[in-house]
Image 1 (cartoon, rainbow, N blue to C red):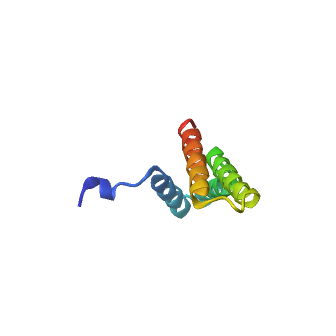
Image 2 (spheres, rainbow, N blue to C red; image 1 turned 120 degrees about the vertical axis):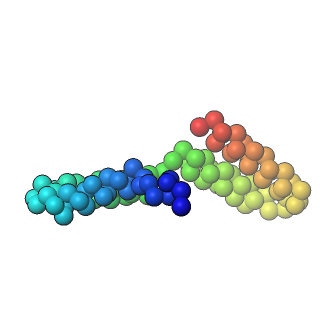
Image 3 (tube, rainbow, N blue to C red; image 1 turned 60 degrees about the horizontal axis):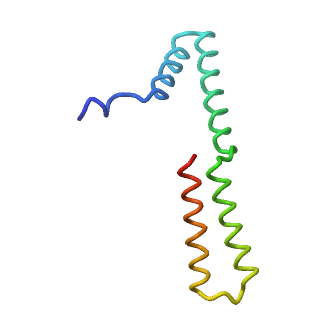
Length: 98
């Protein structure tokens, strides 16, 4: 087993320190662990509800394709494919610039 497999991530190390403080530290340790857990939960909630620029670009691309299909119901498969390829290329270029 490689040494790296046994090493903790930064998050894992902080978690273990907080747990050890809770087990051995009485009220101070309990407060440390509570602060750690509160911070971790806050971070996870923030990451789950925040929308990134790439997410917005993805939604805009989907909307453009959807609007094209609705406005051009008689477009040929080749036209739809060309439009889709154009929008995907534009999306990829915009994401690459982030």
